Image (cartoon, rainbow, N blue to C red; front, side, top):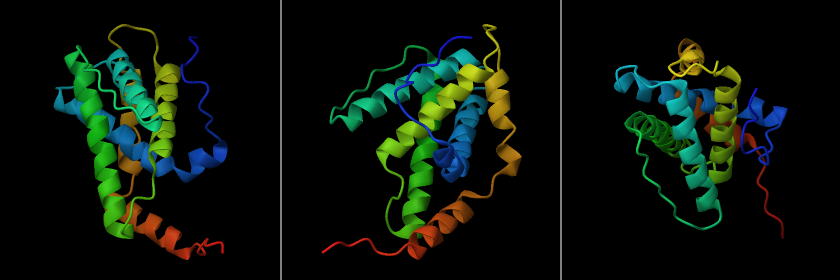
Length: 165
């Protein structure tokens, strides 16, 4: 099996538990992007979209703005689906809490985890959609985004203020 890239980004079990639902929502947005393209994108298109977004998020974390357009129209459509899902999640989160709780570094780690899932679920066939099918399996188990945002708002409100004088 190929070694997944971005191994320098640590993803703990605690992170997976804490961000399980947002990652599933972003993964669903990736699948939605594939559906908007008639279900034609493959796992390799998803891999290309994920890597492109990871490069952009990494560059943004270092203060650079890097946007390299994707030549592959399927990968570009999948990336748009990912970006739309992230934007929608952040908008709902901000609406429920009055602020964005999920920072860019956390989004990067979520996308890297989705990329690792792609490497684990890609069967190596050129036109395979095993990974996209795997992600689609989580669609029915997700609560509505509004409920998730309200739950995250309740969790952040229950935390004690962390002001150090």
